[in-house]
Length: 345
Length: 277
Image (cartoon, rainbow over all chains, first blue to last red; front, side, top):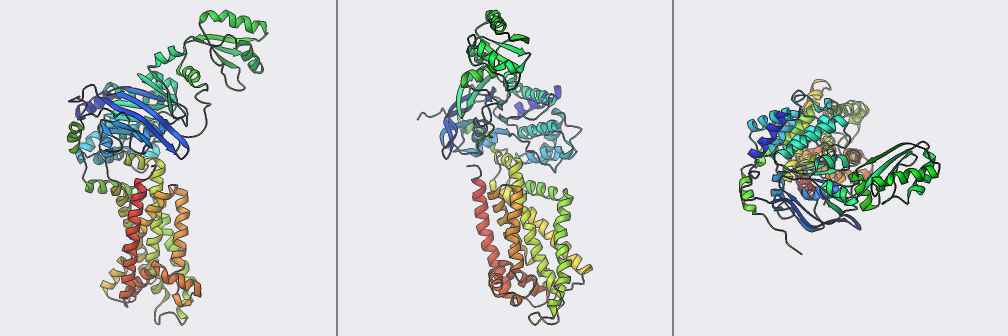
């Protein structure tokens, strides 16, 4: 994807602050006690964050954990109830217009204009970002090429796939050369191939020096893209650090067990509880179980316990803990099961 | 409370100034976007013309005999009486689509995108207003052309009065569009705005002087029709069309439109700024 890299390097060159003049070692985003409450409901509580320029930070948590609320506050769409935040060096409450000049936002749903072509969409964003007509046209060409949309550039959006819409959505957010980009679940609902394409775009963006804050429910996504992960649960930061450190924090190793008979799942959990370091998990009605244990030496013990209880299995594997396990260990509940609610409005 | 370390903002801010669009560019870009959307949605164009055409056809036939009643102006055919009113009601009905359009943009995240960009709140709303007023006026011109070509409508007055017939409802169109933008920002759900639009426009259209003389309405409806701003605009348009202009109706029509526009602009802008706060 050389073209993509070219376009994003151009972002860095044109952007007034990416050369680091006078702002070396600065923080792109910093918050202190940031809180948002809706009546009695606390959407985001007392969040302290700092993101260095050029970093990519994953904001991880289930639906309703406050990720979207946090992003909406940082992008000036939502007024905090209390606390302070600087984005690009500007206070989000005192100088929202200045904040808006340095950010790009890609929301949960592709905010693209249905009745315009891809090219017209980018051109409009360019003009609204203060570019001349010819500069906006050039920018549209550049971004369409970078995002693999050159052939679709003059087609109406009704002909675009979900993945193409998301890519265009991200292209629109980048039109004005933002230094800081907020991505709110950019791959939710995409097929694996489109998700992979989106990841490559995000990686190129970071390689070109843009600061990225990436909200996601997918642990795999945060694991792959983020240098640092912030885990939110019920509006609070419950853990923070590089994915590898967080995995180490959980410690140990995970045994993946496949039973022959799903009906024996509960009995297996009960029998194996003595070896587990944190709760044994698995989907309801499924024959699969995950058992966090201290180390690989626990494996014979697991087999003995299952054998003693006459529980038959057809699969047994050891693996390193993932962020999912981290989340479970930190919050006592799994990411997907937390709740079904959307983030507060 | 600990203060966060503030980055020397002046450095960044100075360099940002050069990348700021003029408000004219903002309004033109956003209006152009709205207009393209209108022209590229053929079903919307079709249905927004179908309704007034159906009303013109049906009412022209159903209420024809009204022209023989004592309250009706002498020597005027019903179509000459009806068409100026249809021009006004078309604008009022057309205004309701402003609330659906703004609610659709809110729903799709387009407004979030605009709000996260360094553009003014009021230019987004003004662009909505300008494009929708332009669409409403286009509809009335189509209706007028149809009236002249197909339905046998004719002006009784001078050319100036004929032009005034078409443009007398412009202030009301402007005001009603602002009102519906406000409703759209408050309601936020495209489906709900359509119901809200019917709730506002139907009483306005029927409890008015649009289709029959006010004197022939039942008493309670007469009371409503007399405080209905649409009645004055219809009376003003009809006065011009029949070559018998009414300064009183024109004055009241413009005054009411001015007040309605003023309140709606303030309300819509305030509600827009408070979205999600």
